[in-house]
Length: 467
Image (tube, rainbow, N blue to C red; front, side, top):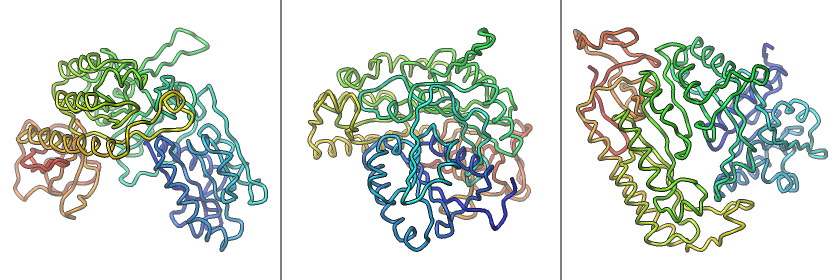
């Protein structure tokens, strides 16, 4: 349906993970078919949606703050609908409606019903739809891409999680694991490439447990390694990333498949959460420190240059100084180049909240987290220093934030590189890089591939020259 100036407008904010970004794209696709047009000006919107996250308490507190800020808009623009969707809607549905500041609440599997919910919603008649499906809900929907650079796209390959880690709210807000038909995934990736996207990130709470079985033939099984290969074979110019891997599930087959294809990026986000076996057991992570380190060794034996990033929780229930030291020592042993680091935040309804007291004092959590952050900063700098002098293939993603005459993009290992936006006049590239798809002269554009050499660095960025 073609939009025009008379179309009702939807304003949507997205919080949380990459999966939520992709869900927002699905929502916009559904609403566009019903005649809605996206706007970035909430003052002109007839519907305001907030796609929410519940992983940590501070994420939910931000949403409550935004709801307060929507009050003047609802007062000035009678008829404007405010809706909360996503994980927080699933977890706090009744509390949200009881606030009388929200007109619509819809969980992650209810987005197909949004057009009907919006039509029927008002402050006098708030609407709610919370379901958790056991089947993939949005198989046939082509998302409306909302990325800024037109280069990178997210594709959900599965939803939900069966692991039920004791600290995690996701299984309760997103339901059980269900995988998407691989044909629709490949079709979406192929269409994104046709539209000019050069990088696809395959998304799932635990991509390594992706598994599709055709119910009609019962002999057309596809696991994650096979799916990776199917997407990689679309075109050598299409780069493939994925997130997130669970250490207990990543297989040798996945690792070898990554090593086989140049266009599958050599980066794995590999959440460890803790370096202590005792804490890992209480977290229900279902692997040990030894298992984790064996998987890291396997990854590096097949892909020596593979970048590893991680998640770490500080101050989980009953964590001791010795547990904390084991986390620090594991960080040093692996040498992560980046980590997402958080204090433990108790989530009501999780196994940890029911079974274990949140007994690590806040000041101890903060001190331990600061020590983790300080160590990671050193490891990040050391990792980048180890890449100095190396030549890397980079996909250009945008203009550098600090210099309009520089560009930035990520290497295969996911490290951010900054480099000039054009080759000097008369520049001659090394002949071995004069291969299809690699720009070697003139001005460089977003979406190009270039070869760069790292010549200096910070803990966050590789400063590069063109080669």
